[in-house]
Length: 190
Image (cartoon, rainbow, N blue to C red):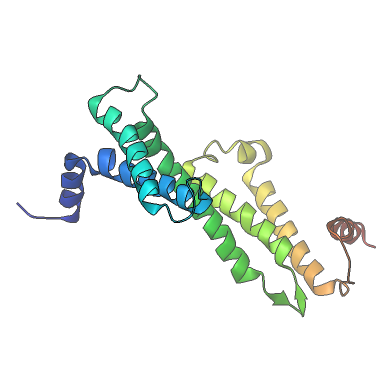
């Protein structure tokens, strides 16, 4: 039999790593960290904090192993369902920060970070939504037509490029409402 990484993961799963060990470590770490940080039992009571964290984490895992949780209320099953979704949100948030850091520098001596952070957030939502299949219905394309959507996108992109090139220098103290007014003035020709 060839030993592969997938075989190792299957072996660890059969040993109960995902159902017993990982939830135990997660609950133990969180409870211990909260007890240490808040010092509920007093300063320097690490041994008591370890015992309480151990009892709480075993109280979560043992009923799961024995099947004593009511159907639909198994804490370990909930943890194993929620963690991948939380990880996805954390990755999306990290991608927004990375994109904002990449494009949030200075353009022509001005910081444009807030606007580009918003653009980065929208881009990440579109990317993750596309990966999750949120945009599969194509109702937007069916309603307006592919050519119209492409034309509107091109006009908006070229409009933003022209606006970045031709706008006046930003005065200190301008707010987002001034930014919206500037965009409106651009499209009406002021």
